[in-house]
Each structure stands twice: as structure tokens, then as C-alpha cells.
Amino acid sequence: MTVESMVAVVLAVVIAGYLVYSLLRPERF
Image (tube, rainbow, N blue to C red):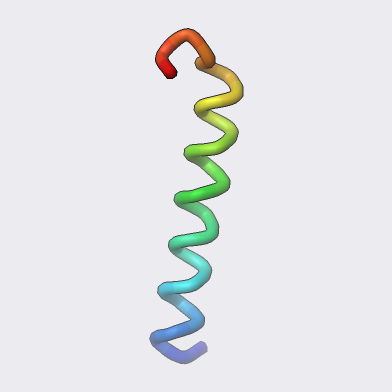
């Protein structure tokens, strides 16, 4: 994997995790 693809995967995981967290904890937003 190249550095760009690794960064893209990390960003995708972070964004997906944040979206799931915001859906599970709607009272904090």
C-alpha cells in the first residue's frame, strides 16, 4: 500500500467511526 492509500483508509475509518458514534449518542450533538 502507498502512503496516500493508507491515509485514505485511516480517514475513512475515523469518519465512519465518528458517524456511528454520533448516531449512537445523539444527545451529545
